[in-house]
Amino acid sequence: MKTLRLILGDQLNSEHSWFKEKNEKVTYCMFELRQETDYVHHHIQKIVGFFLAMRTFRDTLISRGHAVIYFELDHPNNSQSLTDNIHNLIETHRFELFEYLLPDEFRLNKQLEGFVKQLYIKTSAVDSEHFLTHRFELRDFFKGKKSLLMESFYRYMRKKHQILMNQGNPEGGKWNYDKSNQKKWKNQTLIPPQKLFSKNVTHLVNLIQEADIRTIGEIPRNEFSFPVTRQEALIQLEYFCDKLLIHFGDLQDAMHTEEHMLYHSGLSFALNLKLISPHEVINKVEEYYSANSDKIHISQVEGFIRQIIGWREYMRGVYWKEMPAYEKLNKLNNTHSLPDFYWSGKTRMTCLKTSISSSLKNAYAHHIQRLMITGNFALLTQTNPDEVDQWYLGIYLDAIQWVQLPNTRGMSQWADGGTVATKPYVSSASYIHKMGNYCTHCAYDHKKRTGDNACPFNSLYWNFLDEKKEYFKNNPRMSMMLNLLSKIPAEELTQIKQRASMIIENPDAF
Image (cartoon, rainbow, N blue to C red; front, side, top):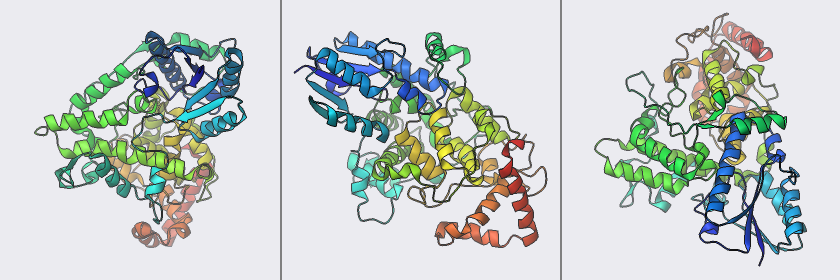
């Protein structure tokens, strides 16, 4: 049967069973689309990275003997609509069967489900063969339970897949070494240089500019440095294990003005495009630990694997359980606008200036910069989560909605009312000072709560607790902070709230 198969830009899994053998009756289609470049303002490196990876994947399929129809952005037959392109190909080439890999974004899943209902030919959808869970496994796991506790799901995943397990018990005797994963980097260890796969992408930058696609950020020297092929991703994984894993766990939450990667793997983009699978990453890390257990502590390994089978699989499960209502949740009724400096990095607050400027330059920030710097400030200034979502989805190379949305709207902004996080991830300057060197040369004093040179995070933090105390009065994890709030003298609290109000009304002045 003459078959057309669709491959989306984040479905570049060359190990998928589709590609095990050639079939002359099968043609694959891939499209670079304005539909996808324009639904949010993306970082220039994100669009370039997707197009580069897609084109390379196309070439790989062709080299293996597969038939591929690929519409580049400026192809004359490119309607810029996913379903219009598919429909036109079916009509032109008289395909008898249309197949697609299940999308990971609700938006695309809905679009394709609606489209195939209107087709007169046979259709089928198959699994992407990437994740360790099926779409609704988390929903089924928590059925009948009151909360979606990540730790419970994480332990279930460890047992199910026999990851870091020893005769039914967790390797090392503990399930979670999170308390060992919160150290500050103090230049004690020399960080190996970031692994780069630099490729000149001037042709893609020109294509995007000529098409007048609105982008954010920059792409220094028109070079793209993250892995865009399976081989590069495997090299990056090997490099991470050999050079970075040994300190990852200890320092995964650390922040520094001169280091944007520290000991992080640099694999998130490759993983989210499915160039490699979480199975491969976990297996490689476990193999490395087994061969080097005398040199590397279990806490380094567990801390990394928790990110993969804990948070990554967990967030996907939450996404598919809670959508589509989830993307509209705003349980704290936050309505303020995102400050302009999120698009420029122009602020005197060193932590925000560093994190945002680095994000604009690199299309990347690690999870603590995203959660406890940019996300923390957005929540403390009570920003509309719609605006926060749009920013995170656009600025980060690895941001695809299934992973971005529950991380942002749930964990970061607590807009889901506690579905993901049992308490909001907010802090004053004390945590920022504890985990990095941002406060050392900042214009503001991290110890002060009031006064012109007091760190904005301090007044914003206590103001947030006061403003939202009704939401948290029955939350046992917030009781200590609310108790401390109640002990602040009335006059000082008034001054704190006045300063917080000034910051919220005009954040770009700080």
